[in-house]
Amino acid sequence: MRVPLIVGNWKMHLSLDEAEALATAAAKVAADCPDREVVIAPPFTALATVRAVVGERLILAAQNVGWAKKGAFTGEISPPMLRELGCRMVIVGHSERRHIFHEDNRMINQRLRGAMQQGLVPILCIGETLAEREAGRTMAVLEAQIRQGLNQVTLSDPARLVMAYEPVWAIGTGQTATPAQAQEAHKFVRRLLSALYEKNIATTTRILYGGSVNAANIDELMALADVDGALVGGASLAAESFERVIRFV
Ligand code: 13P
Image 1: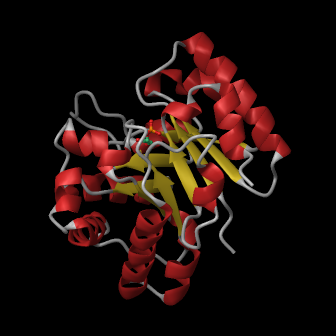
Image 2: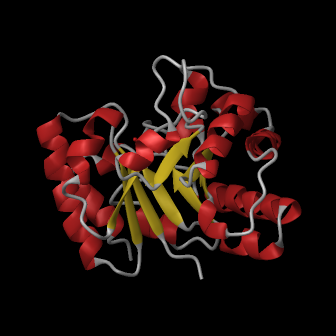
Image 3: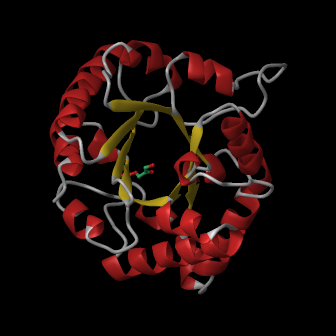
């Protein structure tokens, strides 16, 4: 019912040559795995290069998006610009955008709605910090990020939105959430979606897990009932480890 989705978030990494080589390798694996969807999110500057080698099966995404079609927004990239480069998806609300660049739920909601209006599928990232988890506030934080992030968003087609739970303390630390922690959060996200939308939206929207996903832990994560895929940082930067993540069993 929910086609597994593996997304490689390259963040601010790789030269154009490296990007081309890695995308070429990922495209081969994606073509060989028809039962799952594979996405890469290169830096903006590599999108045009990578587009030439993604083929039919590897989906191109951007790492962020401006909300307006065009205008005086220095440093921003608009949804039509991304569409023109072949992007079908875009990450919004990544924890690095929230915590390093101080994007708040209101701005993330604007970005998400702008993306959707222009036909891009947003991957809405949510997740608590370690301090929030230790204070017992995890679900309250997730709920606020979801309610505000999806403010004024109507959904009739589950294919138009992807959710990603990325606990901030698990990103780039090697400390993955335990299966119980991941499943608890994912189940909570799905329950909240069912409160906000029709039941079929909640049951068919894909919820990805992110945070130190690698070749060694992907199988266990993908076995969880409400984990429908992964948002992968470090392990998506080498062809071999990304391939193993894509080929989870
Ligand atoms: P790592 O897989 O490097 O922990 O990064 C996760 C992430 O932020 C993906 O968006």
